[in-house]
Amino acid sequence: MPKITPDQVRVPADVMPDARDTYVDNYMKATRGTGRLMLFACDQKIEHMNKDFYGEGIDIADAEPEHLFQIGKQGVCGVLAGQRGLVAQYANDYPEINYLIKMNSKTNLVGVKQDDPYSPQLTDLDAVLAMRDAGVNIVGLGYTIYLGSEYESTMMAEAGELIAQAHANGLLVVLWIYPRGKAVTAEKDPDLIAGAAGVALCLGADFVKVNPPKPEDGRTPAEALKVAAMAAGRTGLVCAGGSTVDAETFLTQLYDQIHIGGACGNATGRNIHQRSLDEAVRLTKAISAVTLADWSVADALAVFNGDKDFTLEMI
Image (cartoon, rainbow, N blue to C red):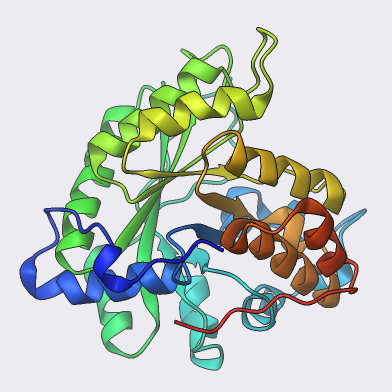
């Protein structure tokens, strides 16, 4: 099982001396003392709106937003990522969850054929710090950049400034980076995915969430992902989970992403929350068994099926 101690956390130089201990504490919390990230993505109520939470194939429990927080409390996750307002509405009832505030979002109503994507910043850092000062367990921020959009310069500038401010206050930052826009013909091209990972490093992110690449040269997606993990350098790379698939397929892909592709975690939303509470909780434990403890797919699948259990002590 991967395990790190506080003195092994590599602290970026833009973390101010008086915030160093806070950064280390937040890093240990977010990675559950492993250096790897299990991110439960709960930002889709803006990104994909209600189609991700109600409809065919989706458990009715997901229609109620509190379902997300029940999963976060009962399951095994590193951080729960959601917009400031969503977290503000529920955090007092779920104080034990590590929160990552998603600072920008857009809906999917305007398609790329109508306009290049731009995800506006929804709040400033002061509002997030005020929540933290009020007792909300906020360990980091998240921000989405659409590389290749005609608005990429605005998003990159906003992200760069947020990262500097967040680090100065001891917070981690995860960048969602997706090549997308009229200039992009293949959003999951391995070279573009690797390029996105390198951009995240240059902006100073602690982790970057990318889509799994789709190579056309005979390599597997995990083999192509290795190049992106190398390009990310000291920025940890994690893959988006995508739409819901069966547990064995998902866990196998995740295992390969980590052990072949060099990923240092996962960022999963729909694959978790579209299930019943019991099933979703078991899947978080199975995912964390692979991500945080290097369990095999077979053992993780046994956790999902209820034949084994997986727990971690809170940091």
